[in-house]
Length: 234
Image 1 (cartoon, rainbow, N blue to C red):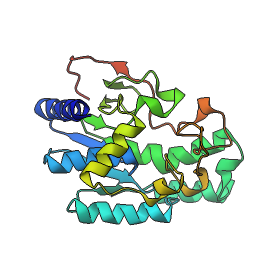
Image 2: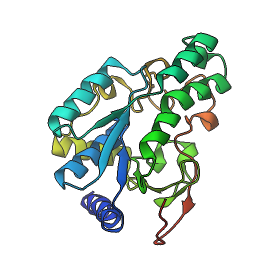
Image 3: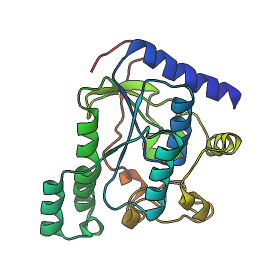
Image 4: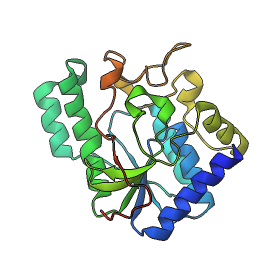
């Protein structure tokens, strides 16, 4: 566990040494709270932001405030474009995401993908808290690569962390976390699209539970081209 923490800090330090415009997109999930804590503790010059889709759980908003209080407002909040969201809801319905995968992905595009694209504009590196263990869709993700969709270098320094690693760190360091994790929610997104899971289910089984595992991504994360140690500037 100590080795994984050191490797994570080393990865962040290397990125800070090589780039200036670095952003960490936090979903306020358990993994991202670990990263937020480490970034704040070490005073890394990394912008931290989260996406407010407008359909989050009340517990997530409570955590959002706690993060701002705990880490001295080190959290930028990014919102969807109001006109796009208004048009989508008025044309397809408030809960259109239940109707088809295409409608669900259109909703994710407006509420998450486009706001993320705006937040990452003119940045050089995008940091995430993705873990390989989370889902079958994340098996091919590289630690450092070029994200073609967002046209940016992408660092995933927690890929090899396990569920137990994450929660041991949170416990040892008294890191704030979403109260829904104690209610059977290992992965937390928008309220209508997230449910608690049962024993033995995949960590992301509660996300878009009406879909097959192969489609359970919102479009934020796609497979990246491995860069190794090669420096590519977005």
